Length: 141
Ligand SMILES: [Zn+2]
Image (cartoon, rainbow, N blue to C red; front, side, top):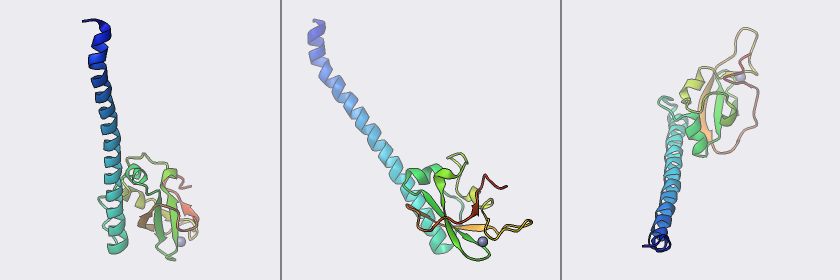
């Protein structure tokens, strides 16, 4: 059998298999995205509707992958709310959201000695509230 006819016989099958592999990869990615989205949504509903528990929670990366880019938080003192962009939080993307809560502080109410804690309310796809002055988890100066 010549190389040429071998290509004719097998070439199409190889190409077909490669295309199916590609498609399967795309499908798998969108399945992961769907799962991340569902998990983020479930967490968000639990937080907003039942006030928690915050743990277990999806990771920053899962929220972003699922299309939720914003975390709405509420100041424990004045009950003002603000939206934090998850992609700007300088923590590893595999950090679960509940780990952020301890370091969320309201900068607007902060005195030299004390900053009121902020609680996580829900996840949103877009910024729904004008960002306020919040102490970010990693810029607690
Ligand atoms: Zn405050």
